[in-house]
Image (spheres, helix red, strand yellow):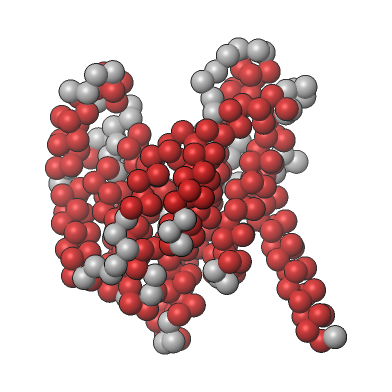
Length: 329
């Protein structure tokens, strides 16, 4: 009887926490840099104008096109899909509370508010990681292709991730790669190299190269404080990868950190890196679950909380997610 009561209590807590987080995002109003663009997109579909939108998100907009404010329902359903996949993933890994904490602390919540379609695709990717670890290539391919066709085409680029190296790499190698990438980034070297490479690609060179709005000038990137946090967390993960004991997961995240630093000035490419680098909302909870030193656990949580406070007050990477307001305001 006592086990049944405990099980029921756990289910109630899970449902309650899901409702709080899902509604917090789903009921927001004009929160996120792209929110207004999604309202315009909804109006475009409602007026019968053809778009090149992914099939699933197009149908979702079409479903609520009978209402002038149907975009609110689109946001609500999108939030439900995102957190369904995130909760399933965190529950599977037995890190639900920590997972929710890091979704907020590591700014994934702001990306979900802003880049709605890719937010769904990233949540699906985190869910699909299990199929890479189990070597179930067909399941992984099916899930990612479905995510790409339905929600965000960039998910299709994640298919080669299945072939990521599965054995642990030396910590010093990852640390060296992260530090060198950060030094190159801080001096703008990658911007010059990638800018020149992109400029010679037909169509993309004209659209994304040169002085395009998709390239952020190095002097406009801010203090680099947010990037410093990602470097520190990446280095800490590399040093403690044996405690995580999930080499494939760690390799994907650390490779994503390096790739993120290399492509940081180029929004269109950085969006690909987001899939990999936001794996940190899963990697760090697993580390804390496995870590036996209470001081180290509290230290990581305190550092993550400090970063969250700084990104709110200094607007380091909130994606227009602050201040918050709901559809009832």
